[in-house]
Amino acid sequence: MPIDPRNPLDFASLNLLLAEDEPFARRLTLATLQRIGIRNVVAVENGADALGAIAAAREPFHLIVSDWNMPGMNGLDLLRLVREEHAHMPFLMLTGHADQELVMAARAARVNGYIVKPFSTEQLRSKIAVTLGIKG
Image (cartoon, rainbow, N blue to C red; front, side):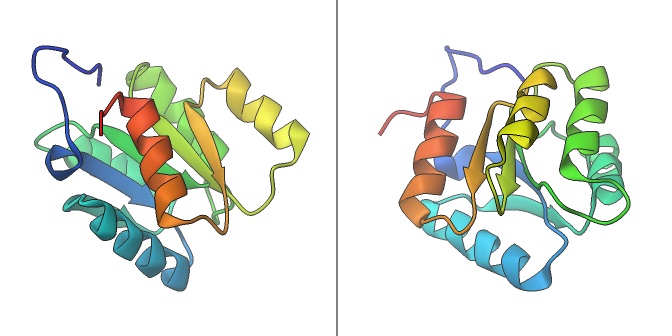
C-alpha cells in the first residue's frame, strides 16, 4: 500500500502482517514489535496463511514481515505471490543467514529490505521506519 504523504504513518497506526513458522521466533518478534509501539499485528505460521490473511483483511496491511524459511511456501514464494496482486506493498524478509544468492533472489522479487536474525529492537525499528518513511 503506498504511503499517503498527507496522512503520515506512525508506529501505533501500522497494520502489520507477520509470517513466522517458529513459535518462539514469532513470540519474540511480536514482543519486539510491541516494544516499538506497533499494536496492530496479525501473526501467521506460514505463507499460505499469510495470503489468506491478506485476502481477508478489512484494511490493507501497511507492511509484511516474513521469515525466509517456512514449510510449504517459503518467504520468497510469498513475496513473489504478493507482488502479483499488491505490487507496492512493503515487504521485509527475515533470514537466519544473509547468503548473497538469497539476497539477490529477494531483490529480483522486489523485496523492500531484509533483516538478519537475531536482530535487536533498534534494528527492526530502524528498518521499518526507513521502509515506510516514518520519522522519529
